[in-house]
Length: 297
Image 1 (cartoon, rainbow, N blue to C red):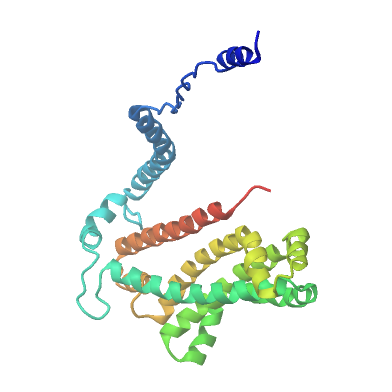
Image 2: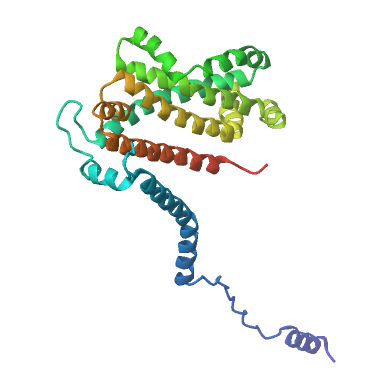
């Protein structure tokens, strides 16, 4: 057999027919039916909402039974709702002066809280970060912080009135001086608790002091800082209600004191319930932020 014939046979055998590529099948995850999703959400919502509603209903029933008797000094819930229906349904009226609806009193109090709390957050987190990075500063200033944070809010009010000679800045100062300590101390302890390995890595990479504080120390201490902020917002809300009772003017604290002087106990009860609801909402907002920045060790 010649060489040409062998090459021809080899070429004929070595070229197999081309095969078509197998189709690629993509597997999409099966979604749960909408009915099951809605049922799950409804079950989770009911598990959170139903128990508090049952407890509130039981408390209202007990309150009604106790205060409905003759000679009771407090009105039952049915009388409270009857007497304050217009106050609840129309919170936006403004007849001039201090004759305003609950919305305007609440907004004035929240505005003062926002000013004082913001100043306390800036000062507390900044000073706490500096103190937490120095062992000597922590040991030297911690006793002073512990003494100042135990002073009652109303004890600061005469001093602030003497210094500012005005009710508005005095109330803001009292909020600041009473709510700054939890944020300051929690920030300092959070900075102390930052892992040394992370700080050493930042120093090895020659990260500057300011950048190291914002990129390593503060993010690591964020859960502790937000816990202090959550404590402080409750203190700030308590303080402004007490301060407004003495300072006067527009505000939910002054509203409570004014209605007490007018012997309107039903309005006082509604204002107290509203104060509690607003305080709970403020606490829940910061609790949500705390859960967002909390990470497992």
